[in-house]
Length: 317
Image 1 (cartoon, rainbow, N blue to C red):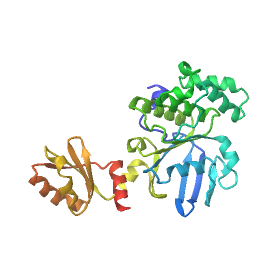
Image 2: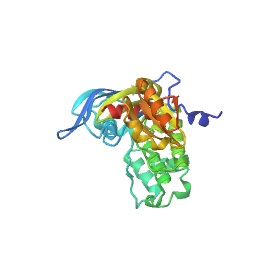
Image 3: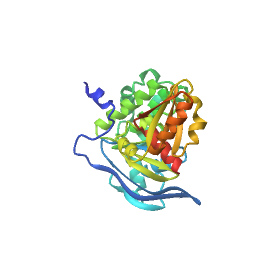
């Protein structure tokens, strides 16, 4: 297996070397008027690690990234980002962090090359033209180098944003929904880049509501309404939920949603292929078997996955 293939494998960012801490913050609280966007968030990240911020829109993911990027000063809390105080050294943090927002944040009327050269100049790099050309080659943007960035498709535009965020070689990269709206091939390309960065000891924080992508991270925090409700490896988060997953199969399985929802102990159910996946307490199994028999359906216990855990926490909330 090549170095790139290893970096792009399923294990994104579990450090295999003695690594330094790039983020260590505690009790971070951020308010927007009367609304609490983040409440007592704590997060650590070592170089070479990929950390996922997981949750629905409005959960506090983007606010967390903006605090770590030095764009927002938290109302309360303490800690350091790349060795700088999160409360006092916002300018120093902004100069050293790579931040890619969910929205396209470059100049649409400038070409790919012009956007990258301008970003290099903004960071005070000594050879901005050469750095822009190098980024174009690294991210395979040569075909579009002279094209206005507004004309790029979603996947190429995201690739350009990533190139711009990395042009000053940051040791910490913050990505807000980096694959939103991309097709499968483009998503895989983004994650290959993330894998290579982790292999080169860049610490990466990824905000996502895509749970399949969250499972690629070495660790994750599940955010709901500004609070961390679970934290650890994806497997640890799944194991922290004392529930069982069942799969109902049969020609009528997907028609059983209402019947299953009335069973005590059922937290949620959703379609999985031709069947119905159910997350419930173990005590609900007998009732599930009874209802399934009435519909000529089969019930099997299956392994819990991250999506089940997130839905369970959402149901509790």
